[in-house]
Structure formats: C-alpha cells, structure tokens
Figure (cartoon, rainbow, N blue to C red):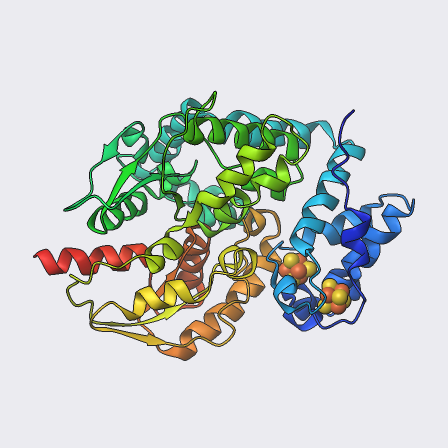
Length: 427
Ligand code: SF4
Ligand code: SF4
C-alpha cells in the first residue's frame, strides 16, 4: 500500500497556537499576514487534514514559506515545522494535478537534470558557453526585466568542474587519522568546483583520506523541499548503496561529509524519508549517524593549527538549514576564531534567512529580494569586509546582495577561509 506523505496528526497536534514563533518568521515579518506565519500555516494544514479542500490560497501560503525552520528554533513546544511543511507540499503534489507546462518543467529539473551527471554536464557546458562567449552580455540588453533579474541570480559555471574528481581518493596529508567520504552535491560540481576542492584540501591537511565516490548522486534536498518525496527516496537509496555498500559490504567511512547546510539537513533525515522501507530503514539510520557538516566535523576533531594570517574583518551568516535544521551554530564560529588575523564582527539576526532557500529566490524573487535587502543592512552595519557562510545557495544569494545593496564585501564559505589560512602557512 502506498504511504501517505501528508502531515501527521501527531506532528500537527504539537502546536498549541501560542504564536511565539511569529516574530522569527521572515514571511510574517515582511507581510504581517497570519496565514503567512508558522502558526497560520499549521492552522491551514489542520483544516486540510480535517477534510477541507486544497485551495489555491492554501497552496500559495505553503509555497511562500521558505522552509527556513527558524520557527522550529523559536517554538517552545518542539513543533517539527520543517517536517510539516515538507509533508504539506508532498500532500499537495500527490493530490493536485499541475498544469502540463509546470509538470514538464519539474520533470526536466528534478528527474532529468539534478540526478543525472551526463545531463548536468551538458547543461553546464551550454551555460558556460552562454556566460563566457559574450552572448550573456548581448542578451542582457534584449531580455525582459524579469528574465534579466533571474539571470543575475544564476550561478557561474566554473571550469574545470569537480566531476573530474569522481572516483578519486585523496590521501591524508601526514598521518591518516580518518577515512571520510565527501558528497560533492549536484549543481555544486559545476558551480562550486573550487569550493569543493578547498573542502577536500582542508580535510586532507586535517588527517583525512577523502573519497569522492563515483556512484554518489544528488542528495534530494531540492526534491524534498518541492514535495517530491519518491524521487528523493530513489536518490537516498542510491547514495546509501554507494557509501554504505550493498549486501552488507560496509564502506567503512568514519564520516560522510557535506559542505552544504541545505543538503546536510536532508542527508541527516534519510531515516525519516526511508522509515517505511524495510530494506533501507536500518541502513538509513546508520547513514544518519555518519553524516556530518564539514564545520561540525572539523570542530569535533583536533584542528591542524598550522595556519597563516588572513587579515580581514569578517561577519558570519548562518545557513538556515545548518543553524535551525541541524542545530549547528557554534562550530563555524569556533573554526573562524581559530584563523589568525581574522577579526569577527557579530551580525544582528545572523540566523534570519537571506532569501536563498534552495530555488526560492528564483520562484519568489520579490520576497527573496526584500529579505536580502534587510540582510545586507545587517551585514553593512557590521562594517566587515568579508562575509562567511556555510551553504553554497547562501553564498550565491549574498553575492547578489553585495552587488545590489552591499559595499563590495567578499563572500566565502568557512572552509575557503580555512583553506586560505593553510595555504598562507605553507607559502
Ligand atoms: S509552532 Fe510552536 S511557537 Fe508557533 S504557534 Fe505553534 S506551538 Fe507556538
Ligand atoms: S519555515 Fe521559515 S518561512 Fe516557513 S513558517 Fe517557519 S519561519 Fe516562516
């Protein structure tokens, strides 16, 4: 029998409607509309669970949620809001047919592109040609304003891509203390290839042998956020088979590492995704025990102190899925504090969403830009020259923020700063 992915009654019942989450919610702070608050959205989910129809308005309110999970942090009753909104979206997906055009587009992105290395490579080559040939400049004069805006949010394709490292094993520098597997993402292999390389180097200098398993695939986070749980389950099974081995042959890794806060929270919830799968439920639990965000992992080991100076003032922006989803807040800050020469400037509301939220900034650009403008006011107020964060999607959004509202700040991932410091030591 097919399992319903709709919100569970027990999860809905946890909400006591106290409203303590409202002020933490970016969409509520922006719109002051109860139905665009966590409490209001849960109220609407309860109505639907009790038989109310799925209306266009319900879909809009659920869609406009960033799934940033700030309400989870604020909630004193332990409401698992992330699980609820993902379930509400899955329920809509299962029960409401989309128009043909939307179905085709979603199929193209979620089924044909993200899980396929070949198609990602082809799309990357086409996008790189567009960006590097001058065509993009020409088009910027003729594209309508909306398309120009979307284009300005598109990531730059880096060359060479990280795909060339699939199947490679990078030895530890010095004594091998750990064997880790690195999940390099899907689009990140094209657009954050240098970040992925920096991540591998930082792990190597910290005594890790790093395996980039050739059978790994997209983590499924974007699928889960879009309500596509069955395709996400297929990807989760493939990743588990790749890294934990098939037929009881264990991969033997000490940790499975990701450098993307957004991917990490889904990777750490494979047990929920596969709980009704008798073949994978136990292996998913073991998987979850091994997944670590790179910040979390590095802060948990004896960090190699051989770093040179990175003279800069820097402020840290939390990735929502790292801070609210995985509850990893102090690890990136601890790591940054270890970098000689770096002066950390505290940002007001550093865990308020920047508006990136997977593909949210493309789908709900107006709301995403309103949030980004506020975020950049907080960044500018710190006076820092650099911004660090822990998720590629946030890096893209913050770079767009610097261009539109910033003061020329440089945006980096925490591991890129560590990499810089290690390189400076050996110069
Ligand atoms: S989600 Fe939590 S904080 Fe928000 S209204 Fe419900 S119980 Fe209160
Ligand atoms: S996940 Fe974020 S946007 Fe959605 S209701 Fe919670 S705080 Fe608001």
